[in-house]
Each structure stands twice: as structure tokens, then as C-alpha cells.
Length: 325
Image (cartoon, helix red, strand yellow):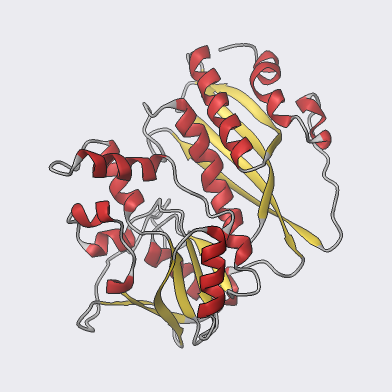
């Protein structure tokens, strides 16, 4: 691996171009100018080889997934991203070509989403490859979509389709035997390269009450909203949107509802907001589906098409085996 400072100068400093406060990544801090009437939203996610991506995944896709999972958190708040900071622990024996491909993938998605790299840190490690990205976005003061803002009577909406990320990991590992190759490739792509809903989130400001993204599983993440808001929720499993590839996989629906890595938006909105929801959906080019409602009580109840309660067990991914995430 190249010298740390040369690595930054060659591969990462060009990604700071156009953001004067980044100082060309030649200092150990960046400077942000505050905008009147706006709040800065900050989020950070870490990814570890063998945990959040396969160790032999293409380096450009690893970089792009790192960007996208963070931008998904900003989208869930209704914030527009503008900058990121990268902290990377690269294995000692990592190849220069791997690093160049990683930087190229990073550059591709920073351009795609109009975001600048403004700082961070790089270190060497015996392994595994560990990456952390801090993303910054802007939202009008007091207008962000929060977990704690769901209200009894709200309709629960989710964007896109659910279960693709869970199935995509299995597809990427070659564990979905018998599935059409096109479906398998689609699902693996959804796992390796999620789509952060950066246009949809801001479009839902003033329409939705609460919001977050689906990273640890639809039901578990809805449970986070319920706990923060002091409410319960009922989900109608038959209404949860599935892709054609997910349906073809013939996986139990309970597994798809509990699986993670979808990075879709999960929001609650008042009844009667259907027209505004449809307008936001059309403007962003992302479908939104009503899947349930917010009720008094606590926890999430999932009902099947016959009105029976489904038992999802643990209900989603837990980093440390607890109920918190």
C-alpha cells in the first residue's frame, strides 16, 4: 500500500474539489458554513469485510455501498446530502489496484449524488478491511422526519420493495439454487448496491410525520419508530411490496419481513395524505405502498391475509444480540 499522505493526495484529495472548506484534504479539519434556517444532519455507518459485504466483492461496489447506506440515513430524515468523511482501515497487503478501483467507485457515487469528500483518516491494519463513512446533509430547521414523531392513526408506508437485500446476500453467496440467473443477479445487485431514496426523503417533508430507513429489517425498524414514539403498529403482510425476483425465490414471507439491507424508506403519515404521498412518489420516481397503521399500545403486530398473527421470532438483524439498534 502506498504512503498514507501520497494515497490521500493521489486518490482522495481530488474528491474534495469544489468544496473550499475541505482545504484540499491538506489539513486535519474541514470548515462548514452554516445556512440560515437550515440544520445540518450528521450520520455515520461502518462496514466490515465479511459482515456487511463479501470480502471478495468488487472494490468499486464496496465504496459505492458505503456511500449509499449513509445517504439512505439522511434521506430518511428528509435531508439533502452535501459532504462525507471517510475513515478507512486498509489491510497491510492491500493492492494499489484495489485502492484505485475503490477510489473510482467512491468518486462515481459522490458525483452521482452531488457530494464532496471533505476529510477523514486512513490507517493500516492486519485486517479485516474496515470502513466508516460520516455523511452530512441539510434540512430546513425543525422539519426533519424523526423516529419519535409517529402518531396514532397514521398510515405506515414503505418505498420500493422489501426482502431483496436479504435474498441478495444469499444470491451473492450462490445459495439460491434453482432461481433464474436474471433474478439472482437482480437480487445480488440489490444487496451490493442499494438505492438511497435521496429524492424521495426531502419530498416527504411536510407530508410524513416519522421516518427511518429499513436497514435491520422492516419489522424491527418499524419497532424502533414505535418505541421512540410511544405507539404500536399493525402491518398487513400481504400488502408489503415484493419484487418479481423475491416472489420467484419462494422464501417464507416472515423471513423477508425480518431480513435487512433493503435501505428503503419507512414513514408514517396521517390518513388523508394519500394524494400528497402520491405526488411525492411521482416526483421522486419511487413507489410508496401503504402496509399498515399506527395504533395505541406498543410493538409491531403482523397479520396475514386471513387476519391471523404471524410470529417473526427475533424480527430482524441485531448487531450485538439485543433489542436495540
